[in-house]
Image (cartoon, rainbow, N blue to C red):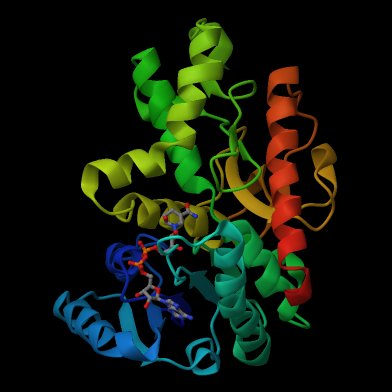
Length: 329
Ligand code: NAX
């Protein structure tokens, strides 16, 4: 057996944590031959709850689970970590403005950025889920002196998976037939699922689904509003699907499951200026991954005027979020 991958999961006692940890322990994130050590970070009042989750993990008797550490101290939780899943964040409370949420959660990510720089392994890779995910990733990256910025990513994979499943349903095809689906921009209702470049059974989506009004209307709004629809139906926010998307994100990036040839996946990564996204913003892009920690933004895609306009809207939002937290960068 190889050396265990050390995975820090923040917000480990939360809903997503509960759906995520068992998937990691069972080998779905890093493959069936890679042991994992889980390093769980929670706030002090949630430590007892996280102890309970750890007991259940033990009771799973997972052959790949090499150990579990629990802490409310970020430096300890990131000690020697190879991968960080930054899930923990405060939910938006009643009457709370988005700007307040940005500031409140921003403070969490300045501290965790510093802790990552201080104690994580030199190959650390970070996937941020806690909202507002893109801007939180930017804050963490800005506070992690000495850690290359391209190690900080945010999750838009749930949006990709949601978009794929809507297209598959409409086309009457299995979801595996939908490929090359990028989600551009922010993980928020301004996100842009790119049907211009996506394919179904190897053909352009726009050839298979000729109902342009549906693509530009219902499809887009269903994907953008899916989180709210789930809260309305379930009474709490998406958790298992978010955990599943995070498994996909990390597995493709550094868990030994590279992007298949000719396909791409969506990750929010620091922009290099591609497609007019200002350099440094952490934005959803189509990327190819090697499964070993490398990724590249796919170049040369053509965007329709419709998609280009939507992309500008989500970029504007990312820039506004960045301005609101400028003092934390
Ligand atoms: P929960 O409220 O169930 O869990 C959050 C956990 O984070 C709690 O246990 C809390 O104690 C912990 N926490 C708070 N501050 C912390 C800190 N400083 N250090 C460590 N832990 C801390 O929320 P859950 O449903 O698990 O969602 C977690 C985050 O994911 C939320 O911000 C949510 O908005 C976000 N989401 C992001 C998605 C994405 O696609 N990027 C989709 C799903 C989800 O909505």
